[in-house]
Length: 99
Image 1 (cartoon, helix red, strand yellow):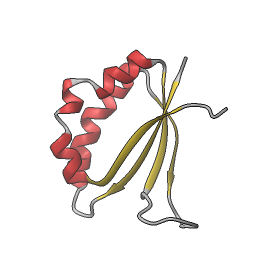
Image 2 (cartoon, one colour):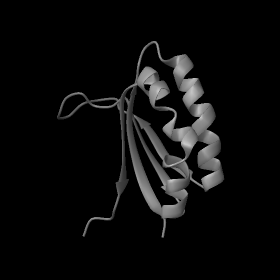
Image 3 (cartoon, helix red, strand yellow):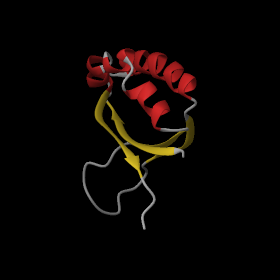
């Protein structure tokens, strides 16, 4: 069963170099895991709430093992300092179909 992951992110103005480092590590991990970007949106207007993310992405993973291949990989875990430099918001969660 596929797993949908929601990422809500905001980039730091001075975080471009760190973002490139992040992407250079995460993209190959996602590819090896068979992850697929379903959609990516830029938040353009607030209707309610505060501190909204700049970007919202949905990524599909083939299964739980594929998800672990990325998020539990030592190279991903080692990115914490890079993420702190690249993002002012980095929230990622697993979605399930509502009843």
